[in-house]
Image 1 (cartoon, rainbow, N blue to C red):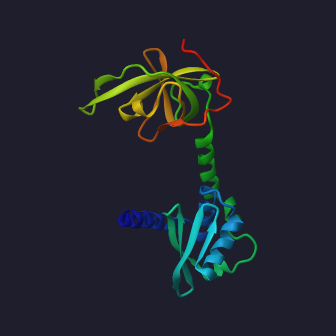
Image 2 (image 1 turned 135 degrees about the vertical axis):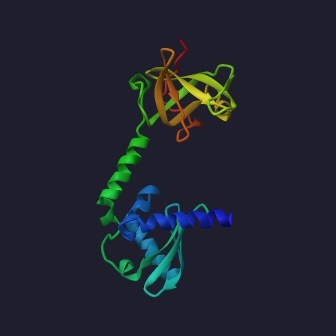
Image 3 (image 1 turned 45 degrees about the vertical axis):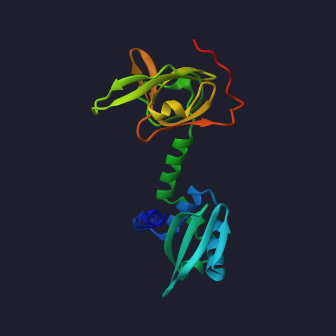
Length: 228
């Protein structure tokens, strides 16, 4: 656990050094973890004075001072989010120093990517060649998996499930453990899939960056669709 945490902190520290300023990085964290930037700033100031503070789901701890720089450890559910130094001058600023950075180009690009990921597609609008497809659908059918020999020189199980929303149906290609992760009748969330056509039939493919997961709370807007 310690080595993993340290590794994560090193990655965060490296990422911070590539940012324009600590203020911009704090704005990035504020958006990523959905905390109010003003409350986030006041929590940092409070942590410097009282050693610890909370803001939303984030816990903030002052780890010490070196000269005019204060090092903070930020965690969520006991997992390290970031650890980095902030100048005392920044903490003494008036107004909304973090909110001021939420309008920078870097933050706008992050918001654009976040909005693109959160946008949910409808099955009727899917076209071959589309990437970063996100949708919520219901599983109608999971055929018996087939064992195939892949181009990587190994065997794998594959099944083309049939999923549906209120606008239509489409096949979802599932591999290995993905097949057992969902069941007929489940409402699932598909993220970052790509659309293709295989043997004249539309098909969603989940690459290494995509995910499929069962949603426990069935969306009330998802209507029952019978397999054709």
